[in-house]
View (cartoon, helix red, strand yellow):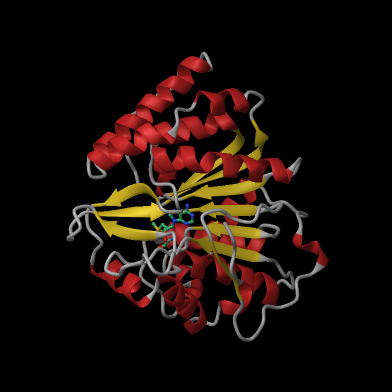
Length: 323
Ligand SMILES: C[S@@+](CC[C@H](N)C(=O)[O-])C[C@H]1O[C@@H](n2cnc3c(N)ncnc32)[C@H](O)[C@@H]1O
């Protein structure tokens, strides 16, 4: 592990004493605020390439603007979602007079086209058969999943360096002073008022990330948190599992983002975590299938059914992969 804090020029504004949770806003309140946002007024002038719709763009702006800090994003890629979130943090500062700490963290993987052995950088893409086509992602030097193809945009961004591209996009849009860009497969566990997660697109990643999300909810203590998950948190079975872990009082969907108001953990969340199978077997099945979405959906259903039986529930555990 290890974090590299990246500071822009000019330096970030000083962080006031009220960076820690105060003034929590409910999802009900935030829904109204989101609906009142005009997309064309807040969208970045030079948005980077990414996967993000208008409604979820408005949603991230809203939580950046109205949720108490500190705020977290995990998985910015080239920074499209980040431009939305940061614009909210900027307007909270410049219009509302409230300064917040905002951390955006990614593994910033290297291109499959380079030989990384000399550098020792642990996060990278690698071609499945050594040639091209299916590419496998390695985080902390461990295989975690595959992409059918990189696509020309991602290829280009990886070749020029994902982190410089992301920081450059924030700079071009005048947003760099309001975000700390951090490298790592984990994130600093602070008492966040809102967190956006865009690193879990299927069951393997959801099971892998759950302990860190639980730690975040534990850190919040009695304070609620707005948690938002992209790609519908990996599909219906994954959401069923997540609901058994967190005390979710309200939920909403904006495009592909599932937003929830979390009030700590379910009384029996430890039983749920203990029932989850290790990711090693699931990862091997996914690897052998070349990242098949059907295999991932089947694994999500299998794990959901295990949780359902363990908890004596009748969870739906529907099929589907929404990553
Ligand atoms: C689908 S992309 C995010 C898209 C982005 N939010 C946008 O607006 O276009 C997923 C990102 O998660 C990152 N990622 C995957 N696993 C991670 C991990 N364990 N920790 C941090 N970042 C991770 C990837 O490097 C990638 O940049």
